[in-house]
Length: 371
Image 1: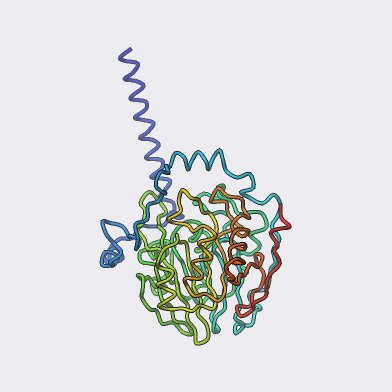
Image 2 (image 1 turned 135 degrees about the vertical axis):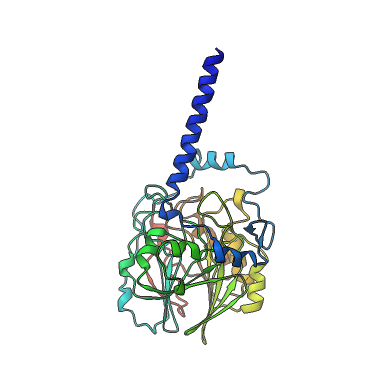
């Protein structure tokens, strides 16, 4: 009997060792990116945000709400997910010729989730592009909803400025970034994220890595880097790169790119320092009470827009991937109701629809026609 248990124990140890080695080998693939090192890491260590080997939020931000557990989260995700977490049919969309647009037209096109294209003051801007069809390091998981991938990198014109809010897979997509390499002039990102871009073949002269509350003067555009309440990481280590939000300022416009963020006082601080804003893009989706500190509830999204002194709110981070447990259209239903209650003008075009940034048109509630 003793020999039997020894064999079982030995076999278990060997199996675990094989699994660990296989995982480590698998994670050497390029899509996982590269952790900061050398001069990049030393620069990160100088940041007041970097403590105990990781970046910190302004407020205490646990990954899970008090009383929640990873066991419960995983159980709900695999066995209790909303049956309508993905649309029951192909999403409606539009497609415009991006290369044929007048570069001086101030327009915006949303690609679903947190990916969008903007033209401001004659500059072409791209934010958190994900065109690979999946928000995952492996292509067969976390697939995009049918109809949400009508654009490809080939459809994009040359990009003056690419903005990356943080390095999660649903915002920083390896396949897309590699395909964009010859089209992008400059990339703006948080401290440490440049390690991924260098690993994927980008010239360091194209990369602009910044801390919170720094100013970047670009041709035709001033950027103020601002905080968010979130986290980062593409592997086992969390918070080894900095997550961001951005203020884009031209002579005639102020736009806020919110990235991913839980609700906190930073919205009011940014609104007081840089507002009012002509338009704010805020995450609205993939939320849950069990991780309420890192993603806002829809009602909080509207309050954040109010805090920012926003003239109009564009809710993003929905309608492409099922990363939360809610129904796919719950975010827009709830945020619309709250925006109506608080008289916050809302923009909700369908994926691919051309939006004039100055336009105050109320769009059709297209999601109501989708199962």
